[in-house]
Structure formats: C-alpha cells, structure tokens
Length: 530
Image (tube, rainbow, N blue to C red):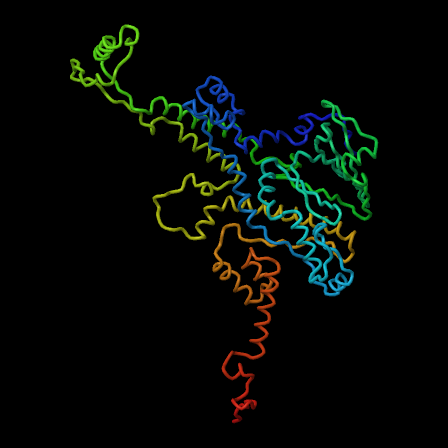
C-alpha cells in the first residue's frame, strides 16, 4: 500500500518521525529558545543569549546565558569511538585471476567517474570496484557525521546510487524517509526550490517479492497543498533525468536502507538518544546562569559605611558640586577624611563567597543523570576526573573508565557495519548490471581499536595469533597498519612472503648457506659422514 501525497506541513514529518527538530536544537545548543525561563530573562534584558542575539548585543549585557551542552557530548562520544574504528572495505571473495584477465582484455571502465578513462590493467577487479565506491561516496569522511545524525534523529538512511559510470552511496537524514504500511516499499521525500518554485520530489521503491521498481515523482507545492506534475517531459526537464521509472528484475529487496537507533517493537523507526533530556538540560543551564547572575551582582567587592559617614560624604559633595549635581554623589577621594562611629568602625569591605552560592552540585547531579540514562561514561567527559591522584593510568584502567561508552559504541558499531554491508551489496548489484564480471557480495569491513593504541601494542597483541596460525598474514598486516592504503598493504604482504620464502629455502642465515652451501672454490659443501 503506497502513500497518497496530498499536503506537506511540519506534521507530515513529526507524525512519522517525532520532533526531530527539538533534538537537533538540543545538539546544536539552541537551548535558550527552548526554555521559557531563559526567554523571559532575555526579554527583560537581565541576560542575553549570545548565540542568537549576537556579540554586539551580548557585550552590553552583563550576564550571559550560560550553557553546558551535555546533549552534544552524549552523541559525539560514541561517534568518536566508532568512526575511528571503521577500517577499509575489502572483498570477501578470493581474487579471481581469470576475472581480472577478462577485465583487462575488455578494457573495462572502472567505476571512478567520467574522468577515469579506460583501465589498461586490473589487478583485482572486485576490490578495485569497492575502493572506487568508497572513494565516490567520500566514505572515510562520512562515518562520524552518520553516527552523530543517527543518534540525534533516531535513525539514518542510505541509498546506493548510480549516475553514468559513477556508483556511490548517498546518506540521508531520517526525516526524508517514509515507509509504506505493507512493508514492501518506501518513499524518500525532498522539499526543493527549482526555478523559484517550490516542489516536493518523491523517490519511491516498491517490490512485489520478485522485482523492484524505482519511480521518481514531482509535486508542485502551493502553500501546504501538493499537486502532482503529470507532464513527464516537464518532470524530466525539471529533475534533469532521462527516465522516471526503472525496473530491476530479480531484485526482491529495496536498495533504500534505513537504520533505526535504539529500535523497539514500540518504536520501530528508532528514537533519539536525546529523547526526554530537554528538562534536565534546561535545569543545568538555568542553574549555571543563575549562579552567574548572583555572582555578577554580589561577587564584586563592596564597601559598607555608617549612615553618618554617608551623610557627611554627601554633604561634602554638595558643597563641591552644587545642590543638584552633588546630591547623592560620593567622591572616593573624600573617604580618607572619614570619622569613626561610636563603635570605632568607619567602613567594611564585603564580598560574597562564590562557593556558598549553591546550585552547582545540583547541576552536576543532573549531568550525571543524563550520562547514566544515555549510557555515557563519566570519565569520557572528564567531569569527575581526580587530578589529585597523580601518575599515569594503564591502558586497561582507561578501558574500564570508558567501559560504559565503549559497550554502547560496540553495539552501534555492529549495527553500522551491517548497514554499510547492505549498502555496498546494493552498489555491487547495480555494478553487476553494467559488468557481469563484478560479483555481488557483502564485503568485509576491517575494524580498528576504538581507543588509540600504539603500533608496538598492536604488534604485541596480534603477533602471537599470527605465529600460532590463528590469524592470516593479511589480517595481521591490516590490523597493525590500520591507516595504510590498500596498495601498500598488498606490497607489504608480497614483501613479507618473499622474505619468508628466502628464509625457508636457505634455512638459518649463516655464511655458508648465504653462499648457497658452497665453499670458497664454488664446490658444494658435503656433510661429514660418521
């Protein structure tokens, strides 16, 4: 059952995906406009929000609206851990020399955009195709933002896309995704302004269990009303497409992939990690701002004098400046001629102890609650780091300090890797339509350590498994060189294997076997017989 589009409003999105805009404001730090208390003080001029009001206005107001954006850190800590752990994408299929020779003979054009030209030699067609897909998709630069967006919105969309010879993965935010009720399709809806007119572009995929059909539709948007543009020629011109519908025989699953964050039976599309955090975030900001206001008003040193002394100073000012200008005015230069009161006290300096203002401990408790609800390690934010402990901590200790965040990140990592594999499988399916030599598969995705590890530790950790035969040489080289290019890894494997063959053929490198077991005259060395 497809979606019948009639109107486009904010509720079109919020009815399906919830208030994604609220969660984005929380992440971006637009907290002032979400808090009625803060907005009231800003309107009265008691505080200002420099983020929304700008620096020029903020510099004329003494008290800023102070924010500790815990919501931003909640989603960025797992994103930092997972993004650095995603390694290179490689084929799970053994390199087929016959396929590569056939590709060389055909002069197949690699999927690297129109500027690539013809490839004269292909060493590994399957891996080269995967590399080009990752390159066309700018994949290494997308991991961090993808994981942030997934947690912030509660979901992430990916679509394999082909334009000419360019096959890539496009990532979309959750609010463009509209699944069909029967589970056999989905729409991606985009609001676009073309030639100064507003449109809603719909990209639809539907499957009947055997074949997949992809359709592009265009609706003219007038206010909130959507009107279908039925002239195909006009739609092709506006969207700059040669065809509006394409059928993929034998494709029983959609190319569109949706990954839900914290999916449950109740929330099948997932929920944001920032759900229900507005109240606590607002209270933290409010306490910090209130403390700032109290300190601004009372934190500066003040002078207290007796009433008789004040009247005496005021009279001196009137005598000096006149009845109008001198009234209520005190010249600090006259304080040196003060007289003592009956208790022998003339003035007193008063300053508030900022430690006694209160509210900061409550704000810290709320921060701790937010971290607990979102499975974020306290040590990851260094809120409660004990600077007095001194000394360095071991890698194991650091791991357990971050244990909660790492556990959460590992779950996200597992789901995200599966998400990427499905998208690559879709890209290879499209590539196979153009070149039957390219095989359809779910490729391998290398995983690096989430916490930074030195190269020495990497070698020490992986070497025993290699020597015991529990790890291949290729896996060892990849894990100990996580940032190396594919070309360097293959060259390093060949170099190691070549050196190993040399050692195996000659045995221990002595002076005799280095000379191929011959003496100084070139005659073979024969072992003495007993």
